Every structure is written in structure tokens, then in C-alpha cells.
Image (cartoon, rainbow, N blue to C red):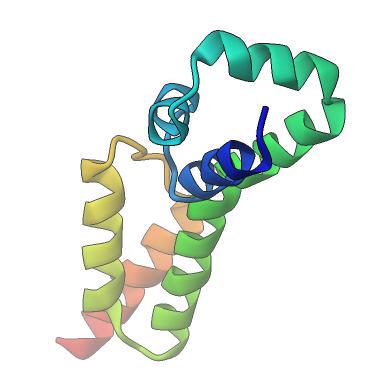
Length: 105
């Protein structure tokens, strides 16, 4: 597979795209990606890390908003995450948000 297509797959995965969406963006078939992953186990590991990147960045932003005492920002981020189809959120985040929202009232 060409480096340009691999880079596009990396880019799409880092946005939170599925494998199918990343393949569509890179204009390669899913079968081509699977074959490439079999031949390049190090890329499989990188792919797995890239797939978690959007959640890691979201959690980072949530904790920054909590630290800045901006619970409204946190709630907006959580709503976006839920709308994106990834509703799993750490209970610690929710508990901290509730505490801060109650303190503001």
C-alpha cells in the first residue's frame, strides 16, 4: 500500500473513524487494509493506539475543563461524545461535574 494511503488511514483513525470509514477516506478496500495489517504487525499496534486517541483527547479536555471550573464545557463535550455513539464515560468525571455544578448554584 502507498505511503499516502497509509497516512490517510492514520489521519482518519485519529479522528475516531472506523476501519471502514478510514478505508473509504484513503480510497482502499477493507481487504487491502487487512492484508497490510497482517504483513505489518507494527502498523496494527499503531492502528490500535490511533483508535483510542479521540477518547484520550476528550478525557484530557474534560479534565482541563474541570480544573478550570468550567462544568458547562464538560457537559457539552460529554453530550457530543454521546451523540457520536461512544457514551462510555468514567464515573469519576460525572461525579466531579455534579459536585462542581452544585457548588455553582
